[in-house]
Structure formats: structure tokens, C-alpha cells
Amino acid sequence: MTSILTNSGAMVALQTLSSVNNSLETTQSEVSTGKKVGSAKDNAAVWAISKTMESDIAGFTAIQDSLSVGEATVAVASAGAEQIVSVLKDMKELAVSAQSENVDHDTIDADMLKKVAQIESIIAASQFNGANLLASDVDGAGGTSLGVLASLDRVGPTGTPTPVEITVDTVDFESSIDVASLTTITDADTAATALGEIEAYLQSAISGAAQLGADASRLKDQGDFVSKLTDAMKLGVSAMTDTDMESASARLKALQTQQQLAIQSLSIANSAPETLQQLFR
Image (cartoon, rainbow, N blue to C red; front, side, top):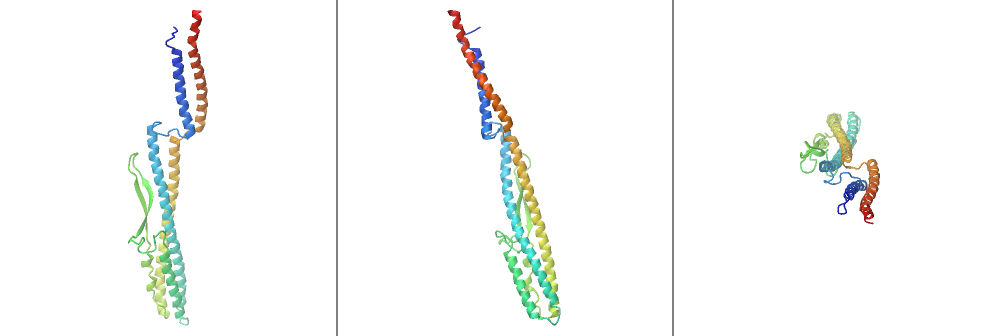
């Protein structure tokens, strides 16, 4: 039955066109923004996960900056420690040479004093951003270690992230290498005493330099891990929310064709009642 009041064919064609237009609008939005999940209405569960991960990514980006500062602080202290080892080796040579009776002990002691001043200067200058891992007081506030933010640990999807630090202890060369109290060299006997003291200082310096080297290596390894972890998290968020452009391109072309056909179908359905005029001629 054909009715001039209700065009069922046009209604079906209109619904089809409306559905195609909605799909086309969605696909065009995905192509233009590059996001298949750009807001909560697109996919609430995926959007919530992606926003949580994005906040973690921002946190790990800040951690990378913290690790970089920590690495630089340890690197400065390590360079200072290695230089002190070199100066102490020179002092050891001077003390050995002073074992002989026919040497100028005053000149050797004067050289020793210059080396002492050099070591004290190195210890004082081996700081980065106000933190000195060669000093007794690391930060000027009585600190004996440097805390470097290294990670954010989360348990469960809604758990609160827990910051984790790597602690770098001071090697405290001000106490263990107290060159200011070195025995004055006046003869072979005092030279022997000074040699023993320098040897003890040298072992402390070597031990401290090795400790700082191990700390620097740990911070570097953690920095590499955080960098890779951040990249992996970014890829995960991308896989959940970004548009597959190849698939979207094919879908867009198909929907444009469907839209053209739906428009033609609606046009045909709208023109169907006109055939009734022939019945009344």
C-alpha cells in the first residue's frame, strides 16, 4: 500500500543516511585529530586509563630531570675525588724522596703545603647546585647524603604512586683526608711519619672515588631504564587512543560512498509518491 501521508521508504532511507553521516563525522574527527579516543564519551574506560598513564608519564619525565641533576652532582664529586687521588700520589712521591738525609726537607715540606692547599680547594669546589659529596655537610644544612628521586611505584590501577629515591652518601673527605694535620717534614723520621699518614689518606681517597663511581653508574642505569620505561608507556597510550590512519582512511572512503548512495536512495524514496499522480489522470 502506498500512502501520501506516510512514506516508509523515505523514513528508512533517512535513518540510513543519518547513521552513515554520524559514522562519517566520527571518522573525520579521528582523522583530523589523530585520536580515536579523544574524550571520555568516545570510550570512558580507555580514556580513564590513558589519562592515568599520561599523568605517570609526566611524573617519569620529571624523574628523568631529577636523575640528570643527581648524575651531574655525583660526576662533579667523582672528578674531584679522582683529582685528589692524583695529588696524594704526588705527595707520596715527595714523602718517599724525603726519606734521604741529603735532601732539602724545607723545600719538600713547602711543596707539601701547596699540595695540602690544593686538596682543600678541590674538596671545597666539588659541589653542584650547592651539594658537595666530598664534604662532611653535603647541603649546608647538616645533611650526610643526597636523595635522588628515581621512580614512582604504583600498586593497582587506582593506587597512589609512591616516590622512590636513590641515596648517595657523602664520602666525607673533610674528615677522612684531614691533610691540614699532616706531619711537618723536617727530617727523615718525620718524612716516614708523613708517608704513613699520606698512605692512609690515599686509601681513603681511592675508596671514596670508587664509591662515587659506583653511585654514578647506578644513577646512569636508572636514567636509562626510566627513559625506556617512559617510551614504552607512551607507546601503550598511543596504541589505546591514537587513530590507525590506514584503517581510518579506508573507512572514510567507504563511508563517503555510502553517504552518496544513501542520498540517492532518499531522493528515490521521496519521489515515489509522485507516481500516484498518474492514477488520477
